[in-house]
Structure formats: structure tokens, C-alpha cells
Amino acid sequence: MSESVCVFEWRYGSPEMKRLFSRINILKTYAKVETALMYALWKVGLANEDEYKAVAEASERIDVKRVDELESRLGHDIMALAVHLSELVGDKGRMVHFGATSYDIVDTAYALIIKDALDIITKKLEKIISTLIEYSEKYKDVIMVGRTHGQHADPITLGFKFANYIYEFSRSLERIKEARKRVLKAKFAGAVGTMAAWGELGLKIQEEVCRFLNLPPHEITTQVSPRDGYAELIAILAILASQMDRLALEVRELMRPEIMELAEGTATARVGSSTMPHKANPVTAEKIGGLAKVMRAFVMTALENIPLWHERDLTNSSSERILLSHSFLTMDEMLDSTIELLSNLVIYPENMRKNLNLTKGSIMAESIMVRLTLKGLPRHEAHELLMKIARTSENFSEAVMKSEEIRKYLSEREISEALTPERYLGSYDELIKRAIDYAKQVMEFPE
Image (spheres, rainbow, N blue to C red):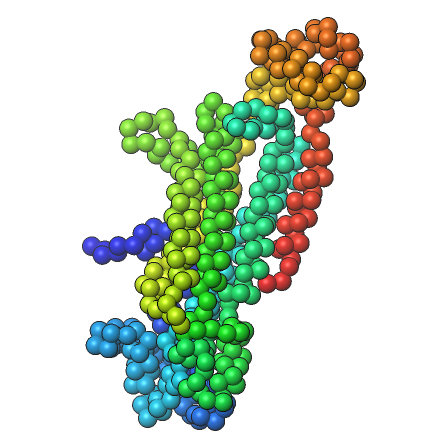
């Protein structure tokens, strides 16, 4: 029987993201940073090349069980790793971890892991944006009801609806690219950030470590890198999660049987209910919504980790062991689910047209009001007239056509044109193009 406790072990998250946050990869990344330190010590003359090469080779042979044994005795994970590396290299281990503090290793290693994790996130987000661009162009002229407060408002097109999501997701992609320069940095400055243990060689050692790892350094730190970076990143990811939640909610709402304009294509292939045979539920969209709640909750933890005592305390450590891995695994599952949702989306243009005609023309009330105002009737009077017609007539279009007050200002042809949804879409096509152009600029912008 499996003893897995965490749902990410057996249900959520892609293999590539799980690998990044696996115990062995975290330990090997710690060891890679220790190797970078030994390289720097060699370059500044405090160690020799053989010692560097020995640690580099040993870093590929990390034994998780041995690290656990040492940690159970020492009570410190990074010290356990340092001792394990020293054991592996024998007499070449005298300078392992020299001058470093634990979070030189931890924070720098997580910068490397997060860098790879953001590459995965970015790739999947760009796939979502590209799919939405395809849909926006394909359904640019498919007219549907625009809804505000859940009520019929003005006509829009399905392509226009998709374009709004293109814009929102592109803004998240832009935020992620911007945040990288503040988050993906090495923290290598010793016990309180002054580099005291390395004497006058501190800045040079930091420089060599950063060159080895291809990471820029933080300009200044305490014992840890500033936690506002993690808070910013988690908040940005939570915004993206909420945007995916909004898209998923749109599908859920429009999949109602009484609306049925969009639907999850895989819903009919699943059992919808253990007791109601007819059910076909939007469970992928609902999963996105559920995980978005978890992601938003992580933001509070990230914010709480910013205030630490003096040059640092340990209150961030335990929470970050959960926060960082689970935030990225949550986002990974949400992105994959959104890709699945979009890939299997079913469109019902005929229902969009049917729903557009549901109110018998009252969705075009603003169109009539605008034309009346332009012909001389004060706007507030036109608004009052059309509100009365909409609320008292069974067929808005017929009532408008028969209204003597309206016929004083508009001809039958003008009324007919004003009641035609295709003629009241504004600059929708140019706005769609602007959203797509913006997305393409963001995707092309280097990280």
C-alpha cells in the first residue's frame, strides 16, 4: 500500500515540475552550489583544483539516506550535506562550505530551481496565450451576448471575449518576466551578509560563484535574500491563478444547460455523478477554481515571511519548504488543466444566436438610445423612453418599430439598422488586433 500523503505525489503536477522539487534534485542543487563555492575558492587561491574537481564529482553521488542519517544526528540539513560531501571527497574536503552560511546554499539553490520552474510555467502560459490567439481570430465575428451582472448587456463577439483573456494572460507573462530579474539572484555573503569569513576576498568569491552558476548576485543581503522577492513572485503567480479561475468560471457559467454556449469537450466522456446518470460536469474548470483558492492563500504566507528578526530568524524556513514547491506544483497543475480545457473546448454558435434573440431585441436598447440622442432627443429622455418600452413590452423590437415617439426621430430603416447586432460591435476587430499584438510583443520580449 502506498504511504503517500501529499496529493501532489499521486494526483497533481507534471513529472517535469515534480522532478525539480524532488528531494534528490534539491540536494543535488545544494551540492551544485557547494561546488560553485569550491570553484570560487580555487580561483581566489584558497583551495586547489583537485579539491574543486573532487567536490564537483562527489556532488553527482549524493546519497539521500546518508544525508538523512547525518541530519538526524546533527539536527541541521545543510551541515549534514556538507559533512556528507566531505566524507565523499576524503582528504580533499577541508574547504567544503568554507565561509558560507546555510542560506548561501539554500537561497542560491532555490534561485536555480525557480529559474527552471519559471521556464516551465512560461512555456505553458505561452501555449495558453497562443491557443487563445487562434480562437480569437477564428471566432472574431461570431456574435454572442455580452453580459454584465449576469444579465444581457450589449452584443459582443466570441473572438472579442477570448481577446480579453489574451490581454490578461499576457500581462501575467510580462509580470513573470519582469520578476525574474529580482528573484533569480544568488545570495552569497556569509553569516550576516558582510562576507567577513572571506576577508578581502569576499566580493571576488561571490563574483566567481555567480559566474559559475550564471546568476547575478543580490546587491546586499542579511543572512538571507530579501523575502519580498518570493512574496512578489507568489503574488504574481496567484494573479495568474485567478485569471485562469476567471476563464474556467466563464466556461462553467456558459456550460449551464439553459445557456450552453461553451462546454468542456471531455465532460461527456466522464461519469458526472454517482447517482444521476445524465450529469456531464465541468470538472476540469472546477478543479482550476479550487486550486486557485489554494494559490491565493499562499500569498499570505509569502507576505508573512518578509518580516524576520534582525539579520534573520528561522520562521520562514519551515513554511517555505511547503510554500515554494507547492506553489509551483499548484500552478503547474492549473496551467495543464487550462491547456486541457481550451484544447477540448466545444463552441455552440447556434446557441449564441438563440440567446442573443432571447430578449426579442432589448439587448439593442443602447443602440437605439444612441441614435435617438444623435438625432436630437436628450439622452436622459431617450434612456427613460427605452427603459419603459423594454419593461412593458413582450417584444422590444416590435414595440420600438411601432413607437410614435421614436418614429419622430428615426426612420424604419434606421430603426432596423439600430436593432441589428452586427452593426453595434464598435471597434471590436481593431481591439482584438491590439490585444493580439500586445501578446506577441510580450512573448517575444527576452527574459
